[in-house]
Image 1 (spheres, rainbow, N blue to C red):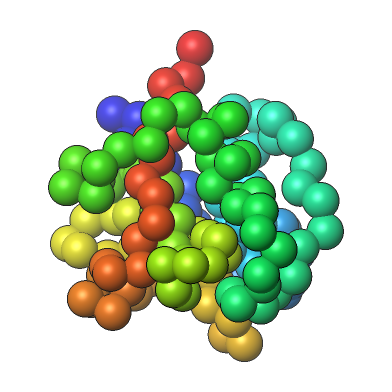
Image 2: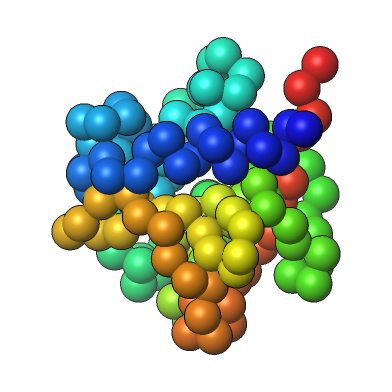
Length: 143
């Protein structure tokens, strides 16, 4: 099943050190770099390279570049109630800010993400994370 491939690919990044704007398993990545790396493992190439971006969640650019890119490449945004393992989760710190964090949902109410000043880890999707979910996207089926 494709969902199992997505989760396994994300889990293989656990322990990769946090490095802003990087995307190399075992060497370094940030949350977007994790998603980019999983995408490459699943599809072979990335659909686009991201422009430079700030590490600060509180960036007030007015643009939601992360969410816009997810819509371009993942398709329709899903309701939080329909999320399932293997889905991309986007987070925002506050409702008035753009999305600035990403993770991949795995089983047992956990998600995998690159945690700043640490590494790629599996975290419980506790209420403080759940209320910050700004978007749920399903990886497109492979051809």
